[in-house]
Amino acid sequence: MTRLPMTGVSVCIFDAYGTLFDVSAIVDGCREQLAERADQLADMWRRKQLEYTWLRSLMGRHTDFWHVTGESLDYAMNALGIADPPLRARLMEAYLTPAAYPEARAALEALKAAGHRLAILSNGSPTMLTSATMATGLDLLLDDVLSVESVGVFKPHPSVYGLVQDRFDCPPASVAFMSANGWDAAGAAAFGFRVVWINRAGLPREILPASPHIEVRTLAELPAMLTA
Image (cartoon, rainbow, N blue to C red):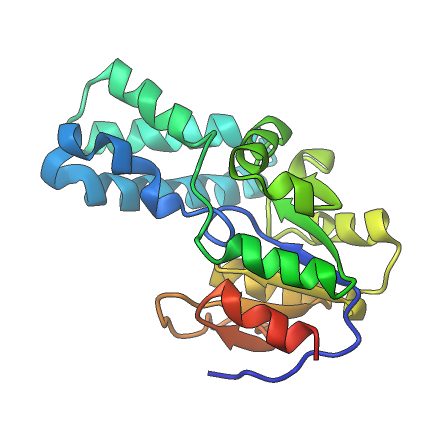
């Protein structure tokens, strides 16, 4: 796993879901009801959520991430034979207040103290992202929260990554982009960002035209590399 200092960075951009916010824990409050189907539902829900963003982008049929999240949950519940509207409502509500990974705050604090500008770039809708950052207190550390709704297409379309340049008026090479999603890391690298893949599960790299520059296991490793 590559761990090299990354110099010349002035802006640190973070993906939200799966990177700062633990989407795998969304179902935790409903595990008693879901029993043995909890992990299966969580995995299928997340997989369909991502698939629907890519398919809608290819179809040219954009809708915001909240609707995609609901549609993918409906698919997963139907596939598992779960018909429970109150449970669905609880799961969707949990997406508005996800837990941050335990090391997220300290990592962002260290990067901010080092003089970096910090922002989120996410598929999430503005309402979802405002709720999540405020619930975790990360809003106080961020210079901005950028949503794909500004361009009406999901990652990894290049216009999404271009939002960072527009907001911070900086060349791609001065941006460190952090994501736990391998496909997102590849998209950001193809755009020209310096990319850190938060590879928590120790997965192989995606076989795509561009690759992340650095791999780490947790956000806690970032300050040492980006403040060197």
